[in-house]
Length: 324
Image (cartoon, rainbow, N blue to C red; front, top):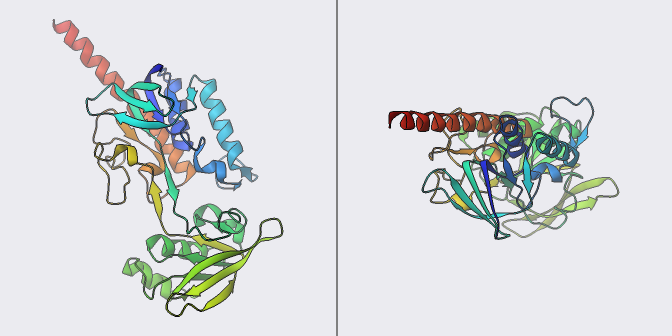
């Protein structure tokens, strides 16, 4: 077992974690990034990215994350191929974490950037057609379905918001829900039902995503009536699964404050958790925006606040020594 020490320990290597690393390294904190099970985060499974600032043309998600990682390493970040399995933050700084490799990581500050994963239906064809007509983010991918017939699957706030957003790009949006009423807030439902571009299919669950990823992608959905079991097909060129997200916060249950859905709670307008010296950034604490650019922004904030936290500790230490 090897112990790795750093002033800034970062768990997670998506846009939030790598942005924190870039700012932390430039501030001389020599950060360590433990990359986790999905190095690079969700963008590594996203093909076309058209809304990240600074690029006129469509870029590839994996390429963008490779460039972020290269920049982080260039300015002094250490990247570790490991997955954190335990954390100890109860005693305050320094914070300790144990990796699946058996190695221990010790940091004066801890930045949590473990992200959140979209929930999927698990139906046949869903994974195979991901990025080829099937998506879990209308804000990310809706632009690619301009003028096309699209479906949104779900019945909560996320699904209704996705359907409303998609009307910016499509004149034919259908919300498909397995029950006969929505769980979304009433004000959102009112907007949905009043919108001329949106129709709703009730009591239907998606049994299968139809199409060939090598020949045009998604062509439609196989539906099953929740009441009668009758099967039908629904033609569409885009399908957005909107049944929520699951933040990767299992490690921190009982150790940090979370909301009812498992997202880490931070001080409003900051990445500060309820434990001094522990910061949360990106989708692990953001259930509203969930964009690469907002994740990167909060990663920057985490690094700046971490630097201030360490400076305060140093000042307090010097003051104590001077008083002796």
